[in-house]
Length: 250
Image (tube, rainbow, N blue to C red; front, side):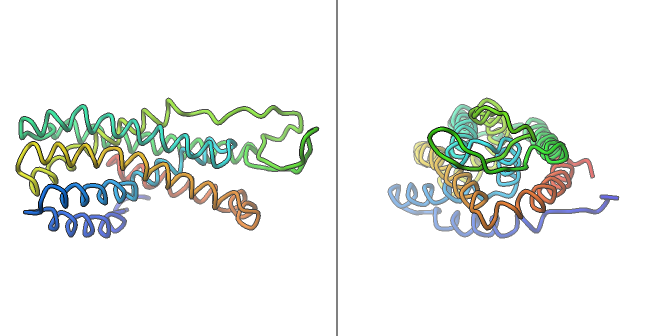
């Protein structure tokens, strides 16, 4: 049923933008190159596989509000940046590439993780986890999501370790491409390493910003009912198809 399904069209705009930014990097002075690496790091959060994975993660663990989403985004970004630095610096020093089998395996693992997160979203939605009800405490009245039982406790959002692990996988899947991009534009090892050192932390900040904005939008009163009734199963279905395609299962 999913044979022939492709999400290549989602990657084309970001690939075109990266190609343009890489063109600016070539032959640029170090200060300018670092500024472009800064922009590349900000843009990196908009990769479709990154957005789908983090959207699924934040949705499946929703309950901690915008702060909880920001925390997950930071942990995801830290996992990604850790892999970029631990693997990227040696690759730059050796002017080598990540083995194709390792990068391909990481991409398949990322796809499988996206599928599992999507399944979790749909399962939790079907079991009523995303319903909400207004209620009060001694200090204030508010509403938030719950699993159907009026008696509840306010537990923090779970998932920092999960977010970090997903970030590590994404870093492993994308480090080779990032290193090749930087070495192509900045053949000097020192410049490429400096650019990577700017790129990595910016990916952390940009992913945290993405998850914060995403959570803030979904918690608006006008959006929340549509999110709970329509968007959650739609996101789950899209994540499932995207994950299968990304893992090369379709």
